[in-house]
Length: 616
Ligand code: F6R
Image (cartoon, rainbow, N blue to C red; front, side, top):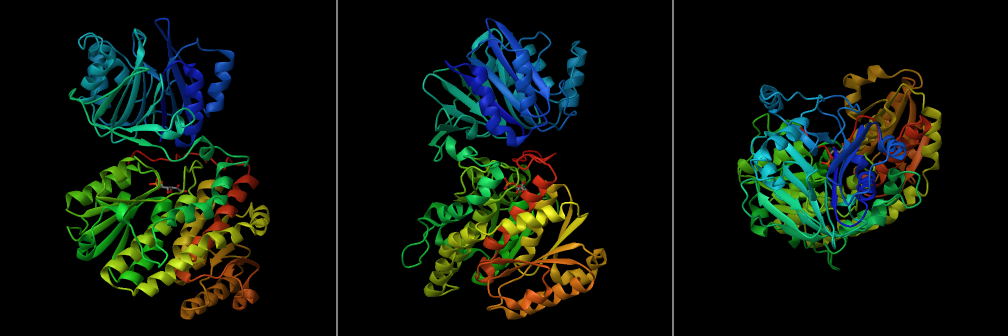
């Protein structure tokens, strides 16, 4: 949510900042703006709409050369996406420029206070108050921008990342964070601030994590971090393990197409080094002792959106392999319902970004109740793993397209690893049983590759169905969360009505939606092993077909029982039902992306969405 970039160094700041914003545009894209300081003057440009609009403006109305600058892409909270509400916001004296991610909850009170001193706000944003407050405290803070920022932060309620520059302090960028992401990039004779390392990865892979309630002062040679009271703070430095190429389109039309294709590698990278040749799991990096795992009497998974669907898949595997009861809960609901969690509960927080505010707040609540929290996360150094008792990183690499794809598959794999590890530690499964599942898991990248080789039919189907008023998805067992995920992808990318249902639930109401020609996508479990499940879904296909639905059946190779009832048959490689989401989801991702393209929508940046949702 909102992309933030700050730069001070020797290069042309505007170029560095705009390039950084381009890499962060997935975070929000309803307006963009930049500010630079040059020869004692602060200059800003901002524009509603995507970054390209700002770039055109900069073409016709250029900014002066400067080696210090800040930039922002916005996802609107307070005030519509207009030129005026775009960041940076500037103080009444024209000296301070501020960019912000988050929500300042006491802004109405601060605005009223500013009004008493004769300051009227020119935008509808909560952010603007910070620019005026900084200008007001600066003389008293000895014209020390970091000190002014500390004083202002102590007055703010809510979540914020703030970055500011001042016309009279031309070599300093100051940042602050509370409950909202901000990372420092340490360069050679230059330093960076950004919401995400992607913004500066082309310049440096040395990153500095900022903690909660910290202020950072940056010059080209110095990074000084304190808490809000001015006490020096300890920081953690790390090397980013991927490079700029990983976060570029690499010849693909869209990031999403690239990320769908990267799934075999993402899955195999997530498995690497976590299982030995005998199929014994080693998750030492997870930081949970075997005793702690033996003590748990319940697992609660908390997550949002696609990550929540990964959690739903995990529940089937976890309960089956470990016999430990597992609940899966939307993070945004969790802490508001007085959930039963305690010291013997293992809470698993799943998050690609590691910054989702709903998930962060839910896990903080769980920790307050004494629960242990294990994060499954894709973003090193992000807040959720930092605040968790334990972490298992997915290794999907940077996911730039707003719609999650490769992160989903790796979240499922990470959950499986945790479940199998718990089963191993608690002795719920024999070693050879675990080794057999691990062998099946190791086969999955190859099987996903096979699915990727046969996506043409799904793409053609999207062309045919692009004007359908609605698409329904049904599945049973792990096919149910896959159905939900397929529907979510279609909603967010193609902006069309799509619903996922547990196939058995259809007859309890939703079947009334069916009429002639309504496309129903059915995820059919493997006919091997759980044949009862398979039989039931074959009946469900017949039920929907009997009511005129157009059936699109996703079934494994060799499953001929579905042939008579499938208007379109999409084949996936055979694999145990529990692992099937890793292949069955892929055609649905391709379908949604192709549908969005067929309708002329932006696949990577769907309307109203942002990649990292840092407000509740
Ligand atoms: C959907 C999507 C979202 C995210 C959700 C959680 O394609 O990307 O539903 O899955 O916002 O995000 P993370 O995993 O970053 O916590």
